[in-house]
Image 1 (cartoon, helix red, strand yellow):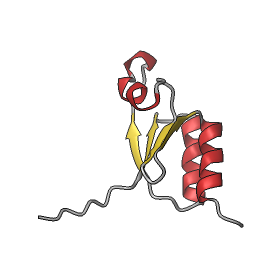
Image 2 (cartoon, one colour):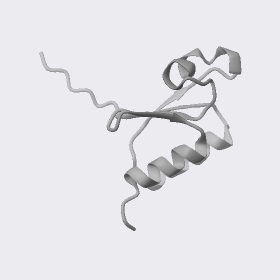
Image 3 (cartoon, one colour):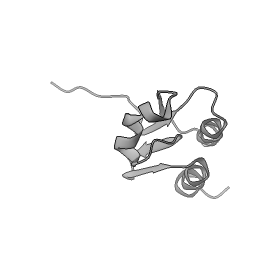
Image 4 (cartoon, helix red, strand yellow):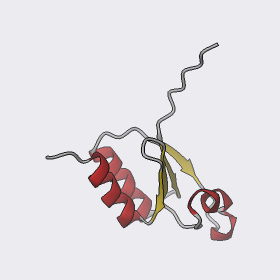
Length: 89
């Protein structure tokens, strides 16, 4: 039995109304990158899922299954997206 998954290869861990998260969302949209949003607990101490994937409890954080990259910090993520998916415009 073959089950094709249509889940995107990039997952963004984020908070509602987080300006740093929105910066990453805008960059993903600029490059038409399909991604999956995972909204995390607002309480910093409750963000165990983020700590498990990135080693930190800060958001935004991404996991890119295409490249095996996991990272946090919006500036780093925006630069990574630009370098990896930006192309020569």
